Amino acid sequence: MGALSRRVKPGHPGYWAAVLQRLSGLLLALFLPAHFALLGAGLHSTEGLDEALAWTRSPLVRVAEAGLVTALALHVAGGVRLLLLEFLGWHAIQKSLFSLACGLATATGLLFALNNF
Amino acid sequence: MKSRESKPNGFLEVSIWRGAEEGAFQHFQVPRRESQTVLDVVTYIQRHLDPTLAYRFACRVGVCGSCAMKVNGIARWTCRTHVSAVATTGPLEIAPLDHLPRLRDLVCDMGPFFEKWKQARGAFVPGAVPETGFAAIDPDSPARRQVEAGIECIGCGICYSECDTVAWRPEYLGPAALNRAWTLQNDERDGAHRKRLQAVAGDAGCHACHNQLSCNERCPKKLSPAAAIAGLKRASAVAALKGRL
Amino acid sequence: MNRARLETWLWLINRGSALLLVPLVAAHLAGMILAVRGGLSASEILERTRDNLLLAAFYGAFLLLAGLHGALGLRGFLAETLGWRSKSVDTAAAVLASLLVILGGRALWALYHAA
Ligand code: FES
Image (cartoon, rainbow over all chains, first blue to last red; front, side, top):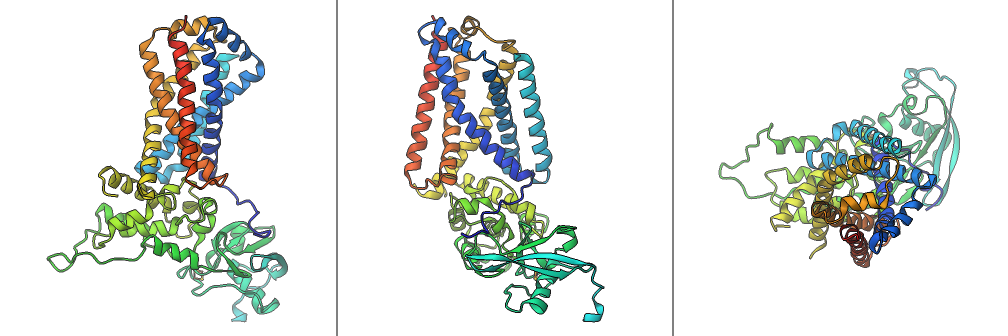
């Protein structure tokens, strides 16, 4: 299509909200099978689950967990924003709603991290 | 005409797309003036520097919708866009709209854009004439207000150019056509509500929209096509629940 | 079913499941933050979940809704970002949803029936 269409468009809050909604959703969809596999590890014995849980004690996994909690909170808060837009037509305050969603998600992630470390 | 122009105040560095689908940016220097619009810049280049430059305009006052171009990456109505508002210091880059066939320089083929208005049944279809002979419509009724909110579209194609969903799904009808459909769905006198809803529901229509809101953000008339699209989503959901879609 | 009706129903399912998931996720997150204080042991988890019908029902509903919602989201991603536009994308989404529900169901079973 030529050099023209490859230029990235400048974004704006509504655009970034949509991008984050999709990325967080994708991340959660990829994480769920792992989450279920881990919890299912206790199917035959408590030791099985304990072994699986031991793996989650590594610092790297803990940071990833906090990230996932943030992603989940963001996806839900951003999702509520979308429902308010689509069902109630609150387009006029969509940017404030986006800020609110980001704030709530950050707070949730921090709360989880503080409790977990 | 000349005598009315303010004194030039330095030079603007301007890059303009030349060619069709394939092409390149060409560089020009244009005298910077006070209250200069982007359209003034393009016109200056065509009149003084290169008469072969192709571009469109008609009214110069934001009514006809023919002067839309991408200015530094964002689609804008160039006749109402002051250079000072988009390029205070840096250079100016002017390109044709996205998602439409490029014919020459800054001119796109708007055919596919308006073809989608037709597909969305964007034309008024007279319904049954009421017994009184005319439809009395309360200007404050919710439906009339919905019409009011969307009716000022000038068909410039800016929302269509800015929308990612159009890029992802080339058959997507786009914000302008759907906005038009929503104004007609709220017109009591129109007799094609059901057929139009069938035409605009689905993944080529309102359900493809992800609320990126670039249409709302960039619409020069400050309309809210995204709100119209949400209205269509709700209306088609209600119709589907009632088994009437 | 025509395309317009199909997409309208899928949109309704996606938004409907989202609406129902909001309180469920909120409760899940609150539970996680309160329960995970410096890490959980398997016996701590299983003590709470074993033979707990209420919890099993809660997570059973959560699982079905999340499976639906996630599969529909992935379907959009596959169609738009990866350009998978043929009808087979619907089958792929259905398979993904089933896999999620089966895997999640297995986990639920393990937690409920823990020895
Ligand atoms: S020239 Fe008519 S809107 Fe710009």
